[in-house]
Image (cartoon, rainbow, N blue to C red; front, top):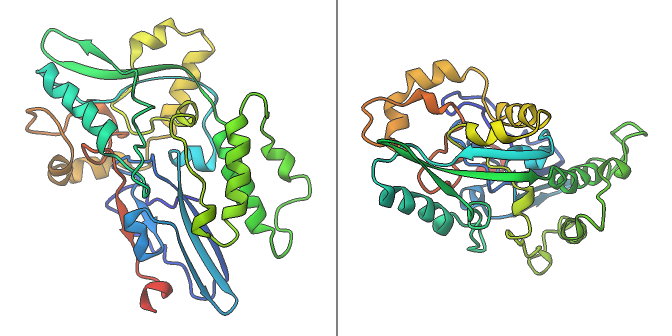
Length: 300
């Protein structure tokens, strides 16, 4: 799922081998961390467009769905999220434009705004000199990954059982009364994934999905809100935000500051402000970077 290189400057051989018969690549459109560029398998990947390729017994499929990296593959604990969503700004007007630009310009392939609802209740942390925008949410569910996990299970076991017998659809059970839209989405995706027929593509409702979408790209935890959380809530946020940090990021960060500065907004800093951490977004629009690797499909 959501194949990433973990650090933007490593070059791994992740091309799909030509003898691979079945591929289902589920990609998160809300993932936009600088160190987590998506490695697409089709030319259409760069446009975040669902695609399918068939030849003989081989069927490769790639779809772009709502959610961040771990919203797709799982890993987040259910709980609150309190994070900064901007770097430091001196002028609040520029800070306002920064956030509103994200809400209005980051789109999926159907031209739907993917961040508008998630960031709608942002607030400003005003300092003596600098100000930052932040978002606090009391509860972000972890159930969205069950929708995609069920798809992975179905596709993997379509020819013969691969997973252990005690690992079945019940593992991805979703409470219908608590999460009615996820039930609807799951059923729609199951029908769509068979052939990627355009008329069966789900109509993603990003407003309803806001409570399931984590802000993986951020500028650090908003600590004042953390201090107000219950004792059980603080570790959850720390663990969840820790999942976002790529391995070996320190070296990559220090060696590539010039490239980083050219793509990310850091107000009046001559060097990268490392205090933001390594979850920073890859651009001011919070749209995902897509890498296209040479593979068998691209040679056809």
